[in-house]
Image (cartoon, rainbow, N blue to C red; front, top):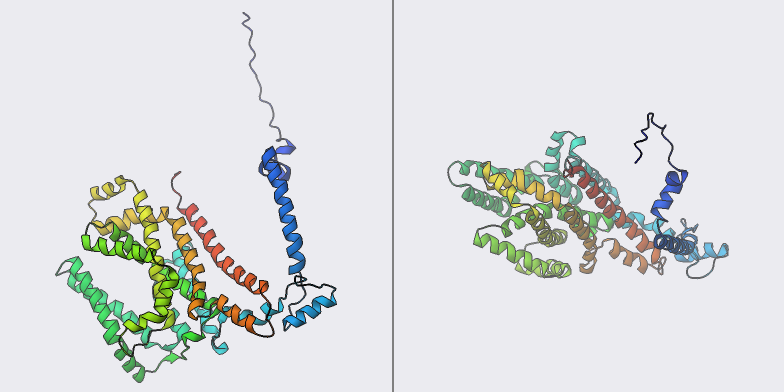
Length: 435
């Protein structure tokens, strides 16, 4: 056997990767043509996309934005030598009715109010969605925004939202006073009862007296004048905002050791999940007033918001319960070893991890709820789909279908896609498994 061996005494210089492995060529090789089957799929997909775009682009590329009717659209297209039912889109209907599709029949003099409400909504959400980029004190505005938004949209006396806010203040004061003398549970129950009594019996007379003394307010706008995307956003945002905390409470109640609390939560969740949302909307529209005291006038949009919130809360509770079930038992034992009570353990250890695990399910529920707001058209509220029927019933635009529904689909896509992208950003930001 030879005892001669070779050992390199100097390093070779670094070489550039092959041209076929970098740049556009390398990307296409690895992502589009990495094998025979993938290459066939890529070629078939390219042909499918080509045929779709070849039919869609000529139809969408239509110089009809300034047309005032479907007949005028057809005249413009006929002048260009394009005949037939699918010769071109009639975008004039979007140019003519896009304000109505966004604002419904809201008085044009007060358009600044919903615009201001939704701009301030972004400001109120910023401490929640992008806490590391905004001042922490902005969270106080987020807490006050739920009272500001309905006042801007519906108008009326400023004393009504202030008295609603006062109900929370009085309830908290009662809780703080009682918690030092009796148990926490009794203090919480009494505080809730005081708040309910305040809102049902005292809020109305007090706001009326204050309005007669200091009449501060803006012009009231009826709920029947709401419509379009503004209506969908109002219902969706409020229902999303309230369904998450209610869902957390229901999820905790379903896992509670208290028999009555657990039975109530399980019964509520199973009943709501077993009933279609459209049934609840009909109940809100027609039957709810039957069970209210005579002379009671309960706003139709508020009824829909309550039903949509309860519906989403039941599904949210199940999503969060899945997150709670995914936590290992050691997390609960760790909280007990630190001497934390139930609420401290939930707030500091359990719930943050459960919510992080549940982010995809939570956002899916939010997106489903936002899209379900289109169901309000069946009870007479004019969401974008309800308005589209009215627009198509007009003699000038009778026959326009794809343009209207395509525009409405685009509006919903923008909001739903934004929520989806934010959930992905939040998952990446909270991902700590690799650290």
